[in-house]
Structures are given as structure tokens and as C-alpha cells.
Image (cartoon, rainbow, N blue to C red; front, side, top):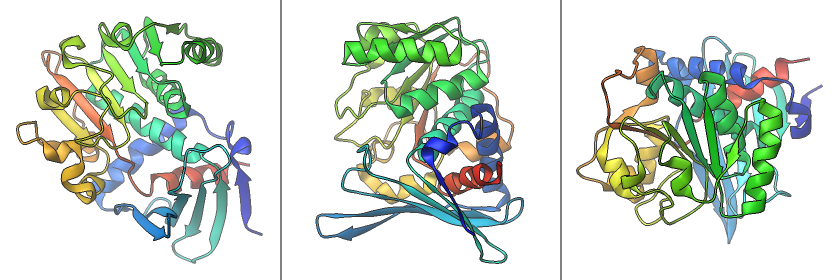
Length: 307
């Protein structure tokens, strides 16, 4: 019988440190050629449609599959995502995971790999913009790879920000301070995570301290971006988890529209090469999370294997 797991059953099946390790291995598999990760595909049906991310792993896990969600309002609480995992040798359907959590947790875990690889080792202060699901998983992943003396969070809804700080302080065992502005959240931060849907800048380049690292969650477009384009332009290191998806977005993506910014690097290559941020590098490093295909399938497979 095909196993079907709902999101609420997933939450304690796998830890964030385990997920970070899975995503690190998946990124290394990109370089070895055993992770198949094409750009996502969107099926348009009238005013709506479906978005598919497809991929597989041909050596260690020998799996293939996809995640699909609607393009009408994929963030709506009553809209479900579906991740299917197949045995790529036998063709047997191993199981289905229903809900948004796999995608959010996967994205957070890759963000943790990016922080571990691209941020300085002696980080003390984390600044977080946003209090949604992505903010939650990104924070958990950051704590899986770094220890912080201070964590500051900001969102436009002050009460929601306080609630988020209270809840995540209890969940993580680390004090999280709600603050009154994005400037206060990021101006002293060694690591900054933006997990918002803002189409206008909420972070200015002049606020960033030398040597800071930024995780930008989701595609950032030339006409809709939550950070000033000059932040990307001044970066000494710019990386993404999915160059294929960056290429598919084309010139509308802020990474492609800037002609005088740094070259876009593949996080997978940096991970596989053992890259470590030099202590003397006081430039800004930026990671743009676009969603590496097949990683949801890898994570869902690990969840399905848990009894």
C-alpha cells in the first residue's frame, strides 16, 4: 500500500540538523552528476494553473519524483502541496507527502547550508525580517549551523512579531528579541535573513556592516525586491542554489539584470569544493534561494523512511 503522510505528521519525523545534512549531500550530488534538478515547470489553465518541481537522485537514494502546488495562491492555508516519491529503479511509487511543510523545511535547510558555507565562523548577531513559515525554518536552520549571542526579528505586524519571538524562543531555547524596525534588526547583524513578500526594499545597503552575510528567500526581480539592488551589486560573493532556475527566470531576475554585480556562483560547487569564507573578507556575501529541484523529493523520501 502506498504511504500517504500529512504535514501535521511530518513535524517530528526529522530534525533540522538532519535536514541540513541531507541538503548538503544533495548539493554535493549536483556536482557529482547524480542529482537531476531541472528548472520548475508551470502549467497554465485559464486564470490558474499548477507549478511542478521535478527531479531525482540516481546513486545513493535512487529516487525520482515531483512536488506540485497551485499557482493561484500557493501560500493560502487551505491550499495543499503534494510531493510524490518513486523508486527510480523499479518505478514503484514509494509514497506521498501532502502539505506545505516539506517545501518550507527544505528551503530552510538549504539556507542553513548557505550560512554554514558563506558566512564567517565568528558570527554573533542574527537579524531576521519576517515572521511566516519561511522565517521559522530559516531561523531553525541558522541555529543548526551557528551559535548567536543576539537574535533580532522584525515584521510590520508588531503583535505578530512579539508572538513569533515568544514562541520561537520557547521552541529553540534561544532568546529572540522583537524590534521596532528593519534597521534595528539588521544594522549590527553578522547574518541577515529576509523572509518576506515585500516588493519594495525593506533593507538598505548603507545599513549593512562589513562582512555581513544575507540569505534572500525566493526569487528577487528587478521590479520587485525586498532589498536595494545596490546590496547585490556591492557583494563580494553572490550564490544561488539553482542556476538553472535563475537562467529560466531570465532578465527579470535581479541577478541577471545587474550588469556590474559579481558573477553568480553555484552553491553546490562551493560546497563540494570545501569553500570557506576567508576571515579577512569584509565584503558582503549574498545567497539567493531559488529552490533546487529534487531536494523536496530527497527530504520527502527521508520522511517516508521514518517509522
